[in-house]
Image (cartoon, rainbow, N blue to C red; front, side, top):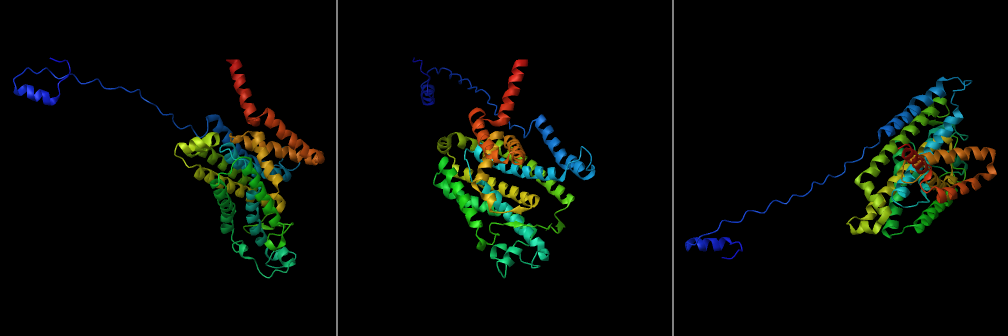
Length: 403
């Protein structure tokens, strides 16, 4: 008899013929596949990270107000109004640098036009602040002074919602977001990338600056908006209001940092990093890079708009020079100096570069641009991961030596 196992039909025929039927072969052993354990999602922050976060939160919400409002001015521990204004301004810059890190550090798209979104948010806030002046202007008119000077009889259409704080705050994020969405849709759809995208964003910023310099646009021309009096009917030039704006700015920065941290650790963030490293492979994997790039581009612009809106009441002025290409380049320098794709690096870079700028423009104003250019070149050549990357390497080397 053949050693080949009998089929069910052959067994039935053999049984009818009275032939001895061999027992059926035993079933094959089950295939045991090794268990695959997927990596769990990393915590939002490590324990030292949370400790640093709450320390920063405590410094913004408690330490700074106490040192500024309650400690006497003659004390060495007093935090002066000037220092509060400088730190508040730098925190606005840090929000813009964080937005730059999302689009450049994690998506690989270098934008040289984020200063435009920053300025647009500032202009939306400035329009509301100009309406808050009311009859306290030089011409005692409900219209802003520059409109009276130019013989305007009524507010232009784009000032329709400027009297409402809530609606104008919606425009703070809606206007930069809408412009970024429209521009990004056509740019990304045309697969413009690399240096070409950077040049186009810089050209967009320069064109917008020239437009806002014109008096007929209704944005104050080259003088812009200034001489603010109140915000939500509260005098703006008081120590308490300055500290309130400082605290709100600090909380916004910390909130955006947590949001960015959550975003880059999500599936969406991993796709962004894949687009940065190999966009063609992402397309072959079935993902549409357009949607991801357009989403992060728009979110980044909206973050810059919020930063600009917080910046204007603290510095007291907004004009078209905020849209200059140099300002957008400086935002990129903050991210590069601090360390791209680290989130904390651009914040550190904004504080380092802006602090150095405040000192240099006071002591050696004619050398500031030379220093800025040299710093950018040195960081690009010798610190590709920025200051934060250098600090991490030193810490890792120290642990290896102790081990």
